[in-house]
Picture 1 (cartoon, rainbow, N blue to C red):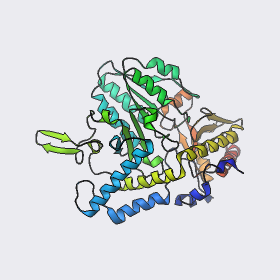
Picture 2 (tube, rainbow, N blue to C red):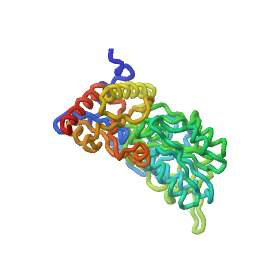
Picture 3 (cartoon, one colour):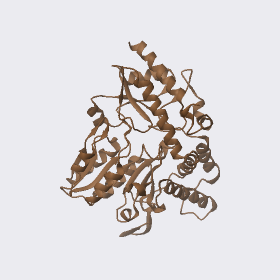
Length: 407
């Protein structure tokens, strides 16, 4: 029996994803770019369609039936998300993406930063968890430091050395979108808290792919996106401990984050609405609810095991070739970044596209890490619950064609 199929029934799952029936350049689509965005099952698509066809209205302020239904849908999505990562309802804030979630925290915490304070990030961060802190440090006269990263992962001893009594914020990715490294965020959080700092975890590459419990991790904030976990674009999630959120100033001002307005003063709404100004993405919330239901029905432990098997198989197939350079440790999330000989990553990806195989090529929004690795770009194949072993075989065959084309 093929061990790859033991964790989940991939063939059954694939039937729920309409886009997987597509052909690209006359070849059956092989989608290996889920680290950038996941595909959507019909259950998610139908939930969004149903909202617009049956319950489209604005939330919270209406007393009519449609508004009440939309409010129920929107608030139910918060509750499901809270249960999914073991958080409280008032600790889940919807934004438009993980990037905005991180910027929200950076902006709000910047009000308490002063000259000489320190922020610690790492050399493996996505730009979204680097640039906001870089810019806040510049604006406030704070110092930003970066823990060292290697191909094997984060240098934990360097993290320990660089968290000091001056550290106010630690911002670290749970899982690298380039190396696949899974960082020891619980231990890093304990180090941060021992010095009186707060910690934000970028969960964009972890929450969609493995069980994540924010209480077990002990982080103060976590950011992730619906679109990477079968949900729609335009919906980001910020988890924040309620005791911290209550004391943080809002990021945006306007409708729905207001409790009372007078000409000379304003009282803000309770959590989580205090941080959700303006008309929200209700249809996106409907789709996100359906996505969470879908993931829960498959089981996050099963998804993690499935991806581990696929990744191990991919590394074995590609790693057996002397001209393939794979980046990152053996223990990783469901992605493999590599280069084929001296062929530029964009050329490799373009040829793979001719074979119907969709991968990502570039610096993956992690330019400092690419520089650290001594490369300008890499090819990244990333997997999810709908991928199967045969698609990795097709990837390996297509790379053989690339060798013959580029010699």
